[in-house]
Image (cartoon, rainbow, N blue to C red; front, top):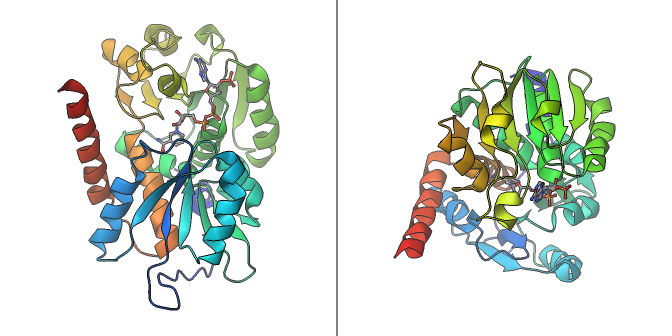
Length: 314
Ligand code: NAP
């Protein structure tokens, strides 16, 4: 991983001094906003992190529709919140409402972590998907430096992955999307910021992808929207004629259609759980200034996933 690029991916605000309690000594509220948010795993692992540090904070989840978003943030400002995570569909609104943004948030065009700007008022917006994704790569035994990768999808998550991989020194990044105009918009926005990498656009047909691809990231929401349908591109075609190892990576967690297709061919694959934990760990560190206990957070999330699986099969 290139040091400078990786630093840019995780950079927040120099001199940020987290304050955990309100003036009256009560813990500052913290949690996630989504619509829907019922199935969010974030409370499980964020509360594990607060408990590990013996802090009294309780990470909540709030189901907030887009039309309620601005009013909720106003309440959060009045009530002196420690911070917020934003998930679907609020990441773009988070970007728009932020008065200062980190380089990762700027590049991703999306904010998943907010905190109050104690100096200038307003909200500080960060994107921890970029750093969280980068942090998972060594665990998968993968370094992007000098390599070629394919990112399927062209939403906010794809942008975060493109920026992360280029920050990690990737040579060629092919963005493959059902709607090519969205992929082109990513190239137009990010290529000027990422002169060390070649960004290119293709459709979903792997015949159009670089032959030397060593990583294939599924950054689509297909697995969430159509969990019971096969992934639209066969795993063998995605792998292509290259005999070198290829890592398949789905940003969605669980036994997704993409993961099922890839594992049926015995290819090596990673789902999105580790990234979810690492992006959450970076958010925790941004709000609190404390080191996030990643192992404990992962164990807490795995316990909830196992519980839910048991519920499905019993
Ligand atoms: P988004 O902005 O809604 O983008 C969704 C993308 O999926 C679009 O490019 C869309 O293509 C594509 N797509 C949807 N259904 C498809 C299908 N049937 N076939 C082909 N392409 C399809 O979503 P996002 O915010 O980028 O998130 C994408 C996924 O990443 C979500 O599942 C999210 O949960 C996951 N994610 C995981 C983490 C983590 O920490 N693990 C973090 C962030 C996101 P079109 O442009 O053609 O519509």
